[in-house]
Length: 199
Length: 172
Image (tube, rainbow over all chains, first blue to last red; front, side, top):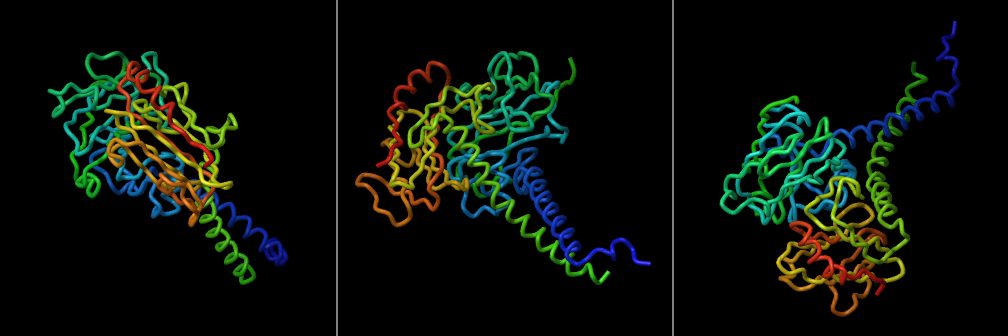
C-alpha cells in the first residue's frame, strides 16, 4: 500500500519543501537578528561592544542587528557603545534592586551611562532622568566616581530604574583613544555592584 | 524516499537564499521606517531640530538624553544636497550621513573641522561637487543626516538651540 507521502506528486513535494525552506530561512534570519546585540565577542566584564557599528565592512548579519538595536549609531572612530545586561556577578539587571556603578577615567573625550529597557527605549520616570555623563562628575571625582541606579531617589549621581522590571545600561565613549578602539576587551570598565533588592 | 531528495535540496537552497535575502533587506526596511517616521511631516532636504530627548519623545532606539539631535531626511536623486552645520563653540558636535543601507558615509565633528563649520555635499558617485563643499558620494539616493550636540542641561540647551537653527540641509 502506498503511504500518503508517496502518493504526492512531484510538484506537491517541491511546493512543500520550498515553502518550508522559505519559512525556515526567513524565520531563522529574523531570530538571528533579534537574538544578539553584536558578535558579542568583545566584552570587558558585563560590558559588551559590537565589532563594527556603522562601518561598511560589517557582515549582513551584524548590519541587520545594528540596524535593529542601534540604528544611526556612529562608527568606532567617533564613538563606542558598550552595553551591560547584567551586574559584575552575572545576574540580570533588575529594576527593583539598588546598584552602584564605580569607575574612573576613560581613554575618551567624554562619556555617559544611560538606562534603557530591554527593547532599547528610555523608561518614563517622574524625574525625567535617564543618564549620567562625565560633565556631571565633579573634577575631584573624575578618577573614582560612583553612580547609583535605584528605583527610589538617591543622594549624589543617580539614575532611576523606576518602572523597568529588567533593564540594561549603555556606556557611550566619544572620541575613544587608540587603546580603547583596538582592544576594548582589555580596557578597565566600570564595576556594577548589586547592593540590595526589594522594597 | 528518493523522490524527496530533489525537493529537499530545493528547500535547502531556498532556505539559504531566504536567510541571506532577509538579512540584506532588513537594514533597508528599518532605515525606511526611520525615514518615514522622521519625515512624517513630508519635509525632505530640511533639518528638523528635535527637542531634548525624553522617554515620551523617542524617534529611534537608544537615543542619548545628553545629546540634542537634528535630523534631515535627504534625497539626492534630483541633484546634490548641501548640508551646512555651524560651529557650536565649546561643545562636542558632529554631523553624520547615513545611507539607505544604514552605513555611515561620513562623520564630521568639531575635532575634524577644528572649530570651523561643516559643509558637506551629498552627491551621486562621480557627480560634480559645488565649490566650497566637501563631497560625500552616496550609492543610494536617500538617507538621513544627523547632527548631535552635547548639552549639559536646560540652560545650555537654550544657549545652543539658536545656533543649531542656522544649520541647513537643502537641494543645491
